[in-house]
Length: 367
Image (cartoon, rainbow, N blue to C red; front, side, top):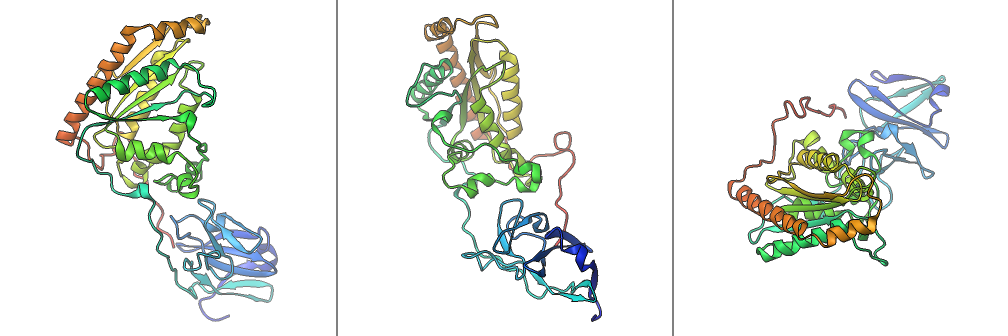
């Protein structure tokens, strides 16, 4: 063999599995065996650096990246039809006397086509004008057969009060949005959990983009309402917050704080007890995103563990002027804090990591 070529091993042993990752020094290579031929291309995806050699080969001979499913041909490194301008480097291989050799110098260069950024990727900027309050209802119901929701009713009281104070408002009901559950991109790698969310980028029909747009780009105040379900927040709440991991993860992998100078407050109601635990989860999670809280940051109501007469629970909340007044005061405190934060610009786009995320996460430098 010519000088510099590397002996990868016995060809018989390299045919199965049909795709594997090998390393030559710091260079990752996706080595494949498909339709009776070996192929070798860069093991680093053009998108966000996913490990191509840990993916799979489809029926047409394209390597499918395990992170976000970008495709490159296992022999040529060229992108799938329609995306041929995206290419990863190709490496020459030769079979000699039952051994497979590879030239570590690539035959082709990497080429990255220009892709329009997702609208959510635009810079986060505060717009002049009235304060903006985003209400999110996490209660589950059939939109075609609506019912009275105690948490949603108080949320509407809060939004009405915000408008009376001169604020702009929006209401998002998670029960009316069609969005996929988190699919665990973070479990593949922290680098695979991107902003905007990987699902949002892959699926234009996914309506979680309305939540991202509202929280990151539009709102100054978040007013979130949840019922208590078996001692916790609602299932829709957890479905939403799992998809918000990409907002927090932008801090972990990029030290990029997307939530700046924003306030969050909460409405928690239910026939069962455990208000403090639900509030603690909400406060802990939204603090990790970067939200700040007004004094006494939630309004809550529960009649206790044994109060199974839900009709009575609904009647108590519906007839309680005290709860409505408490909600209005919560909104006033939130608007006051939001105004001061915007004036002083207290929150920056980066944050000191020690004590919070003490170990800086650095991607391995590989080609």
